[in-house]
Image (cartoon, rainbow, N blue to C red):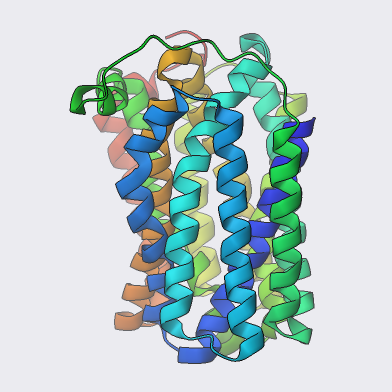
Length: 391
């Protein structure tokens, strides 16, 4: 419960900070490319640090890594708050803060993902992941909505609450008590750092699931462009932006509640590909919409479909990975997740800079559908996969 509460506070702080940061950047520059650069600057340090972070998560207390990562995010939010209050905020500073956040999350994600199997029996893991995701999605819903509402009083109001939430999350994580198996001593080398990549590469179903998520969300993500849609297409302002940012989480929350009650047990491969297909179609619908409520519905459908993808993918990874490897394997998956999210934001910003936001989202959604069809043929092992725990 304490891990759940820490993740809840940290996720809410992160979501609120990203709403404020994105809107502040668009206010400063009115540039789609700069919105995309926010994602790229988060991804670059995450990519550089992910493998060492995974190795560290297999060698020292994962709880301490999580605490330190949350504390660094509190410092980042405090720096942004100071710049906002003093009137020195600039596009360069916002990008620097984005890079610091990316570096902190590079260490947090592998440790956090590898910690859950130490707290939950293997047979309960998919249900526990769905339950945990319900709480996280509540934060993802409430965070952007609250951030958008608080932005009426300026970005400093949002950033102050973010600092408090990150500090609370770090303190809660400090209270965790669990037994982490002692890892055998290994000399740090290129081979040990790359062990997670070799492990995933040797299991075709895992490789297919992780790479499917990478390319589908990389192409289909429209999160970076939401300030443009909110201000220029839907005309709903920062409060509407908060609702749009929360909409995928509303769908994900509803789906996670359903999966907690009725977990996915059979035909997991087919269900994964169906979920990715729905994600692509919902992205196309969002790109075509000029109605605020229809746009919220489309984004909610994206979130619901992505939740099915997340539960299946993460359950496959955690159930098939020995604990001594979970940090490094989770680091590899975090690279893929970061690429699909932060690098996807850069891709969206760049294509919107070239073609406009609507064309960017439409091409991305159609690309996601093409990826789902292609991967079902490239990875027949994943298509035929029946259960999560056994091949």
